[in-house]
Image (cartoon, rainbow, N blue to C red; front, side, top):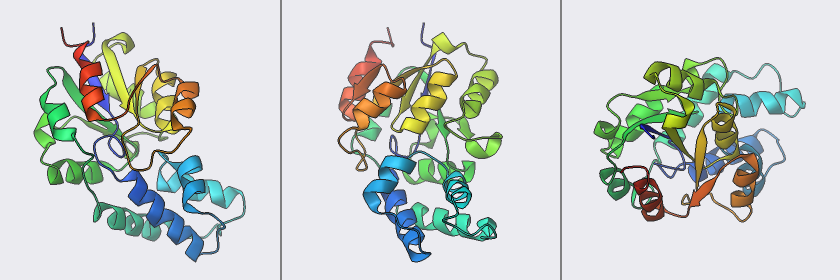
Length: 219
């Protein structure tokens, strides 16, 4: 019996994966990294800015002494200023009877601000699990395992909604069933196949489809 829904934030509730891709790929270009928007979307969607930068540092494409404690907040602020909802999110959340939480690779204060800006805070009642609460963000399962432990739920009592390969891998590594969400502006051809390969069992093209898919779990 499904008792709880775990929603990713960026790309599922708010349409900021495309904003993040535009902001960060532009910044990377400005410091000499050879990357375009489509490459960023393909390789880095769903990962934390810190993990992206550290990955590029390990490849020698970004200098090791880059001040992450300055750069990351600046990138976060730019993305935050451009937050917008994904069409249909309010109706989808209003249709739900099952308790729900947010599990995000973004910082908790960022998620709180996003939920408040979209006027959907009450839907989650403070249940936010973020990458800054665990040792490793997605694709590590840590943040999903934290959610399960905190909520005192078993994997078969939970359904996850994710839009990124990193997120799907994190959830499936925690033993959770995943619905792949394909309604964000960042979605490109091939994402469905990528999410399926990572472990997503079903898909929703938009929030109306997601509402219909989740209805089967609500009795």
